[in-house]
Length: 172
Image (cartoon, rainbow, N blue to C red; front, side, top):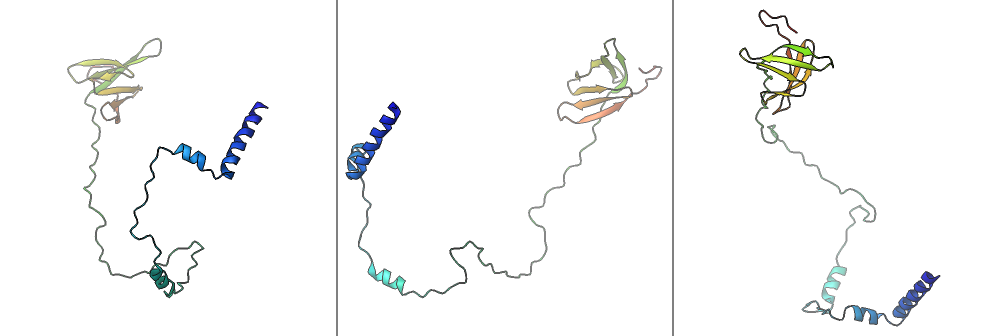
């Protein structure tokens, strides 16, 4: 009920302000603001220009300005010699196949089912788990029975290297 009374008082104030001219509230709100008038050299109406415009002859173009429509476009036929469109781009480089420089020559599976792969470059041997990296460049993604999937860490490209038998070895 109190809210209704407050709204009624606000309504009465707005109605009084509008009926009495409304300049009191506007004057109180903008009393500190200086009004700057537009600088017009000759504010009188130019009847000579109005008369000139009213005597202008209007020709109907066939288009109703109250309805949306496309403007008419004239098509001009030109003979154009075919040539390259746009700048010529250099040929895209052919991506070189990914070369994995190490040999995958076996794996070992422990009792929990976790596999470790064996890699060699001929001189050194590395034993790594899935998810680990080899020489900070190759990530071992998956160890399979016949191959290992490797990912080059710098580019994210993947390759599969087959299981190879070493001379005198038995494989896995």
